Image 1 (cartoon, one colour):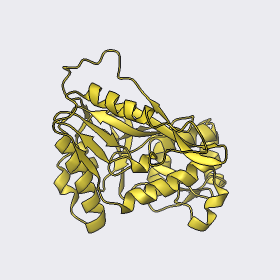
Image 2 (cartoon, helix red, strand yellow):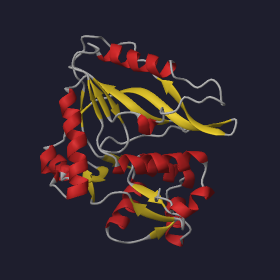
Image 3 (cartoon, one colour):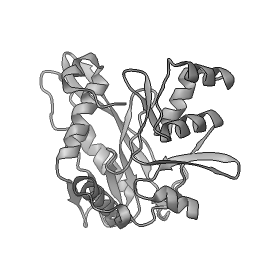
Length: 277
């Protein structure tokens, strides 16, 4: 969605208000990293240690709150020799929000922690100082993460705070299991999604109340809300307050490969590299 105007924040629900303040602070504060070279020896024990620390600081009395435990307060990265906890705030790792309004704010990884540190540092430098995205390399193979903590803001006896849930590691996870890597690929699109993306890529505008959009929905026998939700989940477009569909990307590229439709961000040249591969 569009970033709300600060003066209009009161018109939004608690979740949007708290995410606004949290992500705003995330963009302007320095990168905060905890180095724990001689701490926990495994990713599993690191996760357990952090969970126990949170449990020991849960507020149980609204008159005596334990402060300093919002997602913003967490370090961007906590790492030991072989594993790390990573804040998912869009710089660079993209967050997700589930249907219950929980934000996946922390994940864990058993990849080389220095890779994550460099990803976070270089992302900030590339956005703040215009450094070329070439420093990231090809980025066609990305480090896999294990979901760990999710959170949502809550109101409790007139106070505002954050509720956390932690997620166990998969049942088939082995302590000796090596780092997980995933081959990157752009979002796969349906034909009507492809038409919308190409239309927007050509600097055209489209309103969800317009005749052309209604005809598209009718022609493909689509449910409008489901159709827009699918596009939103693929992190390609958003709908503004005037019902205009707009691209979320800086440089969107849409392609057809083996009879299938794809689209993705090419700000760092990754879509070009994927096509060449």
